[in-house]
Each structure stands twice: as structure tokens, then as C-alpha cells.
Length: 279
Image 1 (cartoon, helix red, strand yellow):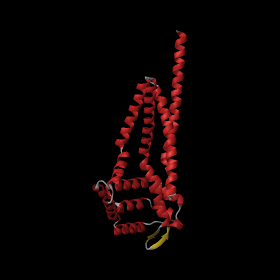
Image 2 (cartoon, helix red, strand yellow):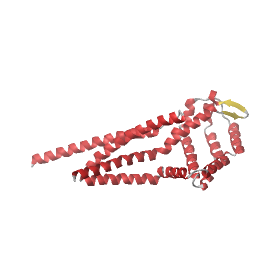
Image 3 (tube, rainbow, N blue to C red):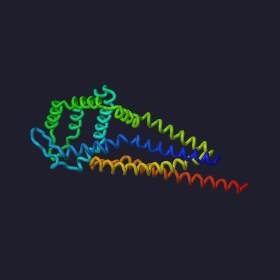
Image 4 (tube, one colour):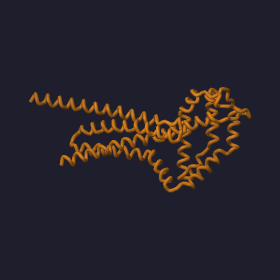
């Protein structure tokens, strides 16, 4: 019976580690794609292209201020814009109605208009309203929104069954519903651990060790994934800072939970000894 109990506890403990790890990845996957993939690609494209404003070529690779560019790319507005079009692109492959949300010309015009000063610092010269209007007109003339819609439609038509499953899986994995389900399963797992161990406190040490293990796993996963992606794709800007940071936080919180458990046990033990001495 004791062996069976240990097996059940070990099984529930392993499930707990996996649930915590999955929850952390679910919360960070979208941010990881935006921060670690999309932003480096945007930055690389900006640095390597030649832009034309008022029919005057500007070699951005010569004039660009890297610190200002990083500051701009790290702003919440850029993050929200990238997330918007990443969501539209993915959702548009399974629901064509989502393509109606595409408004590249308007979004870019609004962004340029609201960040003239930052853009001026980046390109090394004043960005005027005339320049912004011309860029907007060029985007309008090139029908960027229409091209993006057609690209998504064509991509959707060429998707094989496996790719469709992956897209649907991603949407489910980053959804709030999925996160709530995982949180509910973690609570259920802890309840079962407390029930099997017949203790009000032992589940705390299980949670602490599981969090510490999960945090360490996330740090290792982020490091190995970054190494593989950089070697295979050559994308130097790729990083998993968000996931790595989450791993460190979970590891530290897990260690704190272990310490709290030890304190509770010591206090309980002392209280028991005092009660025994009095009696």
C-alpha cells in the first residue's frame, strides 16, 4: 500500500511540474514570438532597406540611431501593433472574416503621425507631416492591406491538414480558456496530493519543489531553443528573454514556497513540543 501511495504521489508531482511549465509557456508564447522573432525581423528589415521620402533616398543603414530604434521597438504601441497583425494573420487562416480587421495604411499613418519626434531621432533628420502624408499615399497606392489579405488567403488555401492543426493548436494554447483549464487542473492536482498524503501542509512542499523544477526547466528550454534557432535559421536577434525571465521568477517563488513550508513545519513542531511539555 505504501509503494502504491508513493507511486501515486510521484505521478501527481510529475503532472504538477508539467502543468506549471505548460501554463508559463502559454502565458509567454505570444510575447516570445513578438519580442523574440517579429521585432528582430522588423529591426533587421529597417536597417537593411533604402527608404524614399519626398523622392530623396535616405540610407537608413547609415543614419539610423540604434538606441532610439530599440526604444521605439520596445514601446507598447509597437508591441500592440505587431500582436494585432500576428493575431489577424493566424486567425485569418481559419476565419476569413478576420481579414476585415486589416487596415495597414491607417495603422501606419496613425503610428507615424504620433511618433514624429522618435522617428526623426532614428533617421537623423526631421520627419515632417509632408513626409508622413507621402508615405501614407505610397502605402495606399501599393494597396498593402489588399496584398496582405490576398497573401493570407493564398496561404490558407495551400495549408495542409497538419499545418491547419498546428494553427488551431496555437490559438487554443494561447487562449484564456486554455489557461483557466490549466490553472483548474493545478488546483485539482494539489487537492489530490493533499488528499493522498492526508495532510494540510505537505502539498505546499510539493508545490514549491515543482515550481523550482519547472523554473529550471523553462530556463534550460529557453537557452536550448535559442541556440538551436540561431544555428538553424541564422536569426541573430532571436531571443527568449520573456520565457527565461518567467523561469527565473517561478524558480525563485518556488524556493520561497519551500522556505515557507519549512517555517510552518518548524512552528508546528515547536507548538507540539510545548503542548507535550505542558501536559
